[in-house]
Image (cartoon, rainbow, N blue to C red):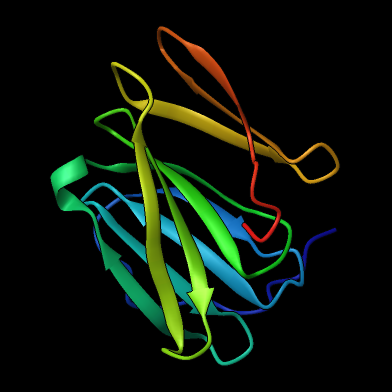
Length: 134
C-alpha cells in the first residue's frame, strides 16, 4: 500500500527522471528543458537547479555511493558527474563524457564494484570508477 508523503511544487516542463538519494533526504528530477533539480525531501525545497539545456533533455539520473555525487544522462549522448563541495555549499560540475551517439536512455550504478553502466538506443557502455572519492 502507498501513502502520499508530500507533493513537490516548482517543476519545469516534462520530468523524465527521478532518483532518491541513498539516505532518502534528497531527490533529483531531470526535465525535458535540460534542467536538473536537487530537492530536499524533508523541507520540500529546491536546493539547487543545474541548467544543461545545451545538452538536450535530462533523460536519466542516479546517485552514487552517498549524497556526495550523482550522474545524469542527456539527449545528446553525454553523461555528467556532479559532486558536493561543502566549502561552496552546492553540487559542482566534475566532468562530462560524450559517451553515446544518441540519447542516453538509462544509467545504473553498482556501489560494490564501483562501476557505472549507461545505455542508448545503439550502445551499452560500462565505466569503472577509478577515484573512490566519486
